[in-house]
Image (cartoon, rainbow, N blue to C red; front, side):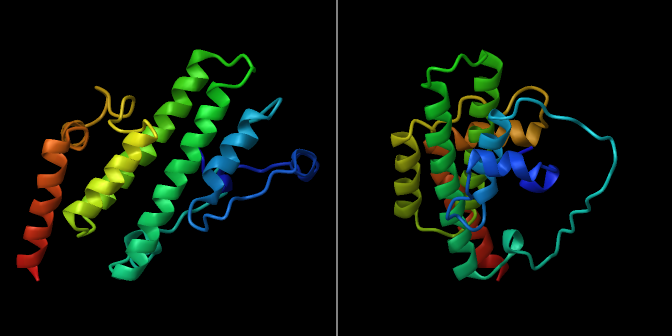
Length: 185
């Protein structure tokens, strides 16, 4: 998990690393947590449920406010970009990392990219803006997604993955969503 609130971390360990959260106010913990885990010598697990996550209907992730939704899309895109930079730096470092760890990092990046593209498609954004974002993902070599949806996921996710990974399906999907939303009021 990449959300920092899943973990209890020794203060001395954090201070010794000197890591800081990035400027992305919505997703700063993602790269921070990955960096933290990658630099850990040991990790323990306690099978106790000590945290409750409340999903509010008016939360930022579920907001209907167009201004907040646009800010959220920008934040998610920046997080994908930061994560891609981190994955590239770890992959290209001189440290010997197992292929499994690199595969996990790539899968995480693709997961965030997948959900970014879903949110982008249903955002009501104009087609030219959507195409520019997809082009930016291509420049980062993040699109098309390579590792996200596999056989263990539901048919819905497999179908969405096929549509998202195919620009000829992605753009009409976004237009269809805008069309449906327009008539729903």
